[in-house]
Length: 211
Image 1 (cartoon, one colour):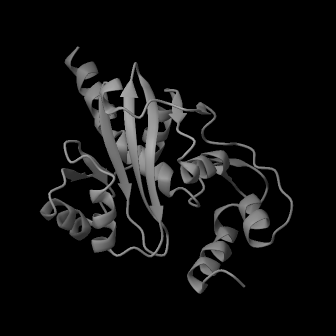
Image 2 (cartoon, helix red, strand yellow):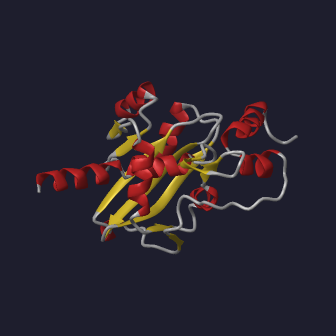
Image 3 (cartoon, one colour):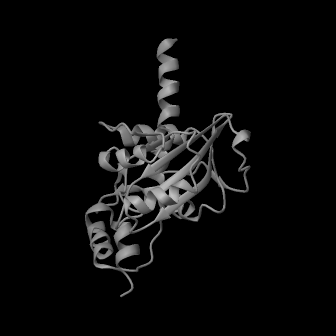
């Protein structure tokens, strides 16, 4: 009774997503979350000083009924550091931009969900360096596989990123067979993580091709 109709629809749609998720989140039954996507992470105090890192990136997943999620990501010695997050529902783009003004260093690039070009343009007009992510066949799987090859350090203050990564799992069909794609549920911060590391993936790809 404490959730809105839009979220009820999301929970009911879990019938078509993943049987385990549906039992746990929609029916409130006991269940065991196996087949987790990421196990290569630690939650720990990490330096927040930008100068500590080789590079800083931001990833942004737009939402409204679903939360908008922005992650600040550090990169050092081939490892990923999640330094800060924004994670809020029911933000207009104007409200999200205002919140980002206090959280985002405009020196660094934001890679955002390409499905929202108008919102990206508003960010650009507000003075942010921002680009659309690249989507295509197998782009989600490729991004996940790349992230899985690097250790992830998450600051304890990033509570929503922590909640998502602890429950993000591969889909299972009704017979319990594990599918080669993640369940599309509670993954907004983790989508932002994929977007935010896209420049790293592309840079490494170009280096490999140059060799």
